[in-house]
Length: 203
Length: 337
Ligand code: HEM
Image (cartoon, rainbow over all chains, first blue to last red; front, side):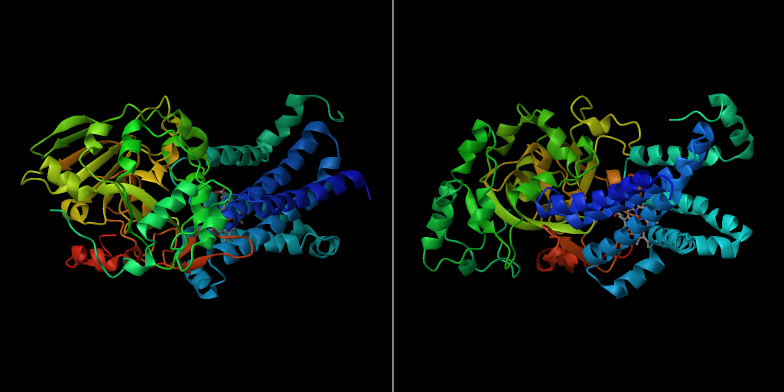
């Protein structure tokens, strides 16, 4: 396995945040509505992991270092894991485990529908993230995993529809997302390495 | 037009801690003996747990507030079988977008708000318009403690002991003309101290505006508050003067008021202008009419713990139906949300 320490580092990092939030909750640092706060942080954390995942390929192109690609899958899986926790906290703290109400929400609220679609997308990617699926799906695997762009769009839309009155935070994440998508447009992608200089520069 | 409040959702006399005990308890608050002292009082039904009041941070109350506090009618309105939200929570989990959009922003940023001196304009369709220094405006009224549920449109709720006086009394004082049909309230606009008003991404058109129908404002439950938890309002809770209309979603209870106008036409409120399909003028708490983004059927009563999520059903008119339902008997509440 290449770069074992890097992988372990990412793994610890992914575990660290939820554990830190739990600790904060247990020591009364999150205020009275801690379930909602943890849920929001998990949603935002998932989006950030998604954005980081999507910056691995451009970074690899920019720097020529292969380590970026090695940790990409794990980062994507962390995004998925955070979304699972995001949904669990939603069920427990927002709906009080009222599954009937979840059915209503799934039918009625566009932002929940969009979030659920993004979740299903992430689920499909997570399930096919292993070597076995990669081999079995062959060329289709790459196509399937292009779904990540759709998921990012849905995630951002979900986030946009939650904004109450101030678009600043959303605008920041959306521009990063847009930049990452832009870097994948072939015309742009071809130019990027040239802009930065020779390949193979280590970090 | 002083209206006496004695309605079914009020506390029975027996539920209210006798004033003498209540006051002596209050003087003990903060002292480490408070808990023991109260526990030693036999047979007292404690509506509000003393420890809840014990963690109140002392403020720097202006002189006029201290003068008024002595004559306060404590426990004038209380709630039955409900715990009062801890002071820390009620003062560190706020929506006051002038100071930022995160729940903790108001507590962090509102320190810069200068509440003294404060002047208030009363104008429009009134016989006695004027600009008042806050202490003069408040002078005629006795403070009452009103313990109300507060239900936010985001589906969380608290129980808060306010100190204030009924809006009906104020209206009587300023004498609305026959043309007056609505009240329009305005919050301070001061981008220098209100970072939220400086944000170029803010969708809100400042200053914040709210409104009530005149008969709603005359309802005895509607008050103007200057304090909470036995002290003056902390800045983040809308100091020095705010509205409290407990049967409506929290955003109706406008904070840091600088202007009250009596008007003939229904004023356009801030949230109505921002998202008319989501926020109506009335904004009565109503579990059967959803906000398009959030269900209103249930609410999180705060504090809601990690292992004790406190989710409960929302009550029509936030449980104040007996007092206010008659205001809306000829109104379709689905259309007039
Ligand atoms: C079935 C799936 C999902 C459900 C039920 C769900 C539900 C929610 C809810 C209820 C909120 C809070 C809304 C509010 O502020 O009132 C929220 C916030 C959020 N969600 Fe989701 N979500 C889902 C999927 C996702 C996905 C797939 C992503 C991203 C990839 C995501 C990212 C976010 C973000 C960024 C926030 C905002 C957090 C903040 O305000 O800081 N969610 N979600």
